[in-house]
Image 1 (cartoon, rainbow, N blue to C red):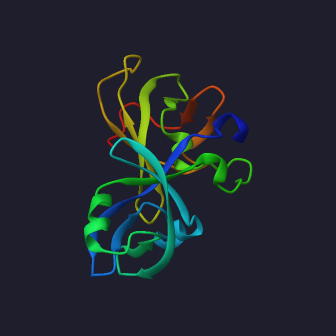
Image 2 (image 1 turned 180 degrees about the horizontal axis):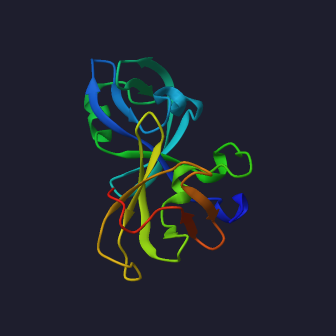
Image 3 (image 1 turned 60 degrees about the vertical axis):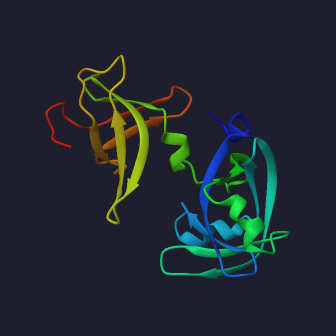
Length: 180
């Protein structure tokens, strides 16, 4: 799947939290790494009361686990409270291109995972950042060899042998009996 084929795919970058202070600032839980990378996208898409819209960040401050941000036009806590709990996203076409063989997490979600023996484990439903390496969350599917949920380290070359976005598949060097 090329970047042009994924253009327009929604990539959730964070979730707006509670209003903070008296000037309309809100907490922003960023799903990016590092946390403040979300600030590279000052215009974020959201949906509020069934209507899609754009929020523009005009100021921000870093906190230990999240950000505080101010959006243009949200100048009081009463107005900003309406944003609490809403996700913010960008289009995948706005993401920087990666080197060949590198993938964004959202590109891996939905891929079918099988091992070198052709045993199908299920589908990638998410990834975890453990600090040492990323870990694939693999849920069983109708085509799975068993009903086990698996956590498989995303170690290119060692465990992850082949990623094919065009075939929606991921091949791993992982035995069916390994504990996850």
